[in-house]
Length: 279
Ligand code: PDD
Image 1 (cartoon, rainbow, N blue to C red):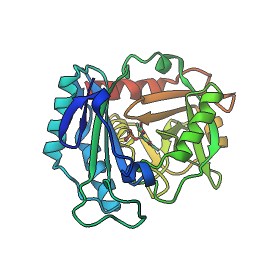
Image 2: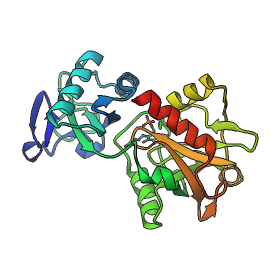
Image 3: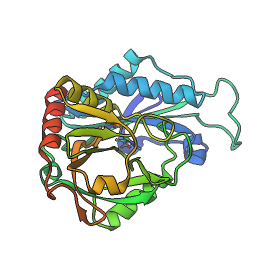
């Protein structure tokens, strides 16, 4: 397994980061995850645009152009013979003596990339449908930044794992914000696809945007508004989206069946449309 660290492709076992890295000490960094299908990156330019935005929002200079990032990702995919899975990219504010304020001008950011082999397209969970639990959203107020400060999601998703379910849907002031690592959707009885509008309360999902576009291109109605867990429980269908799950049907929330307890027809269609687009 070959990984990328600060300009070099090295064997995984040899890749190390200094203990003074600000990513380690302060979670002072951001990340991105792109899917790979048939050896090709999926919707990667949108992921790199969000990476650039995340860096800008926290004042880290983007160390690479979009073209350079793409070349590095492609080389990593090739070197690992990755056919299907994920590319993980992280940029931190670099290595410096521990001090909360930014390190001296010119401190180079730390850049790390690795691949993970994973079946995303023929995932059996997509056939069965995923169960989720609802948890309170304990995160900070800038969730639009893809920060590596993920402790609230770690705790939420551990609760989900302990409950034997695939994802935690986080809520705040009664409304669902998003999944621990995904965007939440419901489909109403009259066939409208509902997802929360973008704001600082949630991550602007790249898969979310692609699914919304595909839905609209296929004559389906998308409504951007916040919804509650109660509304999700009464919905005809529910699903979540992410680079690692694509479109994942939800069949149970907090032990209660959603729809018929089976992946719904519109969700299946959206998953197929997404897979067709991605291939
Ligand atoms: N997570 N919301 C949150 C909080 C996320 O962490 C993610 C992605 C999404 C979906 O975004 P996208 O469609 O761009 O993948 C929404 C990645 C996959 C992760 O942390 O592994």
